[in-house]
Image (cartoon, rainbow, N blue to C red; front, side):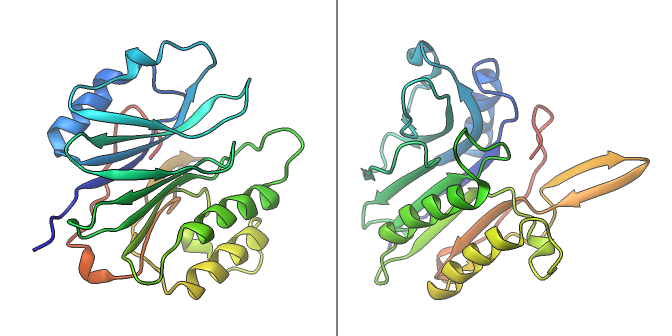
Length: 224
């Protein structure tokens, strides 16, 4: 029988270096095996040893010199995996998990709200999709998760400001028979005395039997 994994995705909002105690607490309390973190905002010159957590390996996105690391992943040390290296600044981490687990391939990603210089939101999305598409394997169980900054609740609205980007994602998701399994709001804010909500965090899988349950929780130190 294949082993199950507890996997999390979390937008830290404004960096992780001052939030390590919270990250350690969540890993311990939730007993997570793998945790993807977005908006980590790790600057050049950071002492990366300060981000180490006993019992876990740390994987960081590939970046070019001068850019911040905005996506990282903690993986429990007893989980065998191989990293498939991605394009620089794609904000994607690709993991191939040992065959003894229910999930074979995991793609963690972060679609930035603010785009780097000389890029557009659409061009950035296409880069991410290229990385994920090259990684996908039809004969395996594939999981894609992270903060897309695309509101799932607006996927059918033609007037949605990110319509072109969303269409790119929907085309790929449909081609791979992937299903979005987050159906409740993951982001909430009060604006003009009204509560606004969005489903910005996405989790896609191509085999629902590999997913036992999904839980959406709020954390006091971050957006979603």
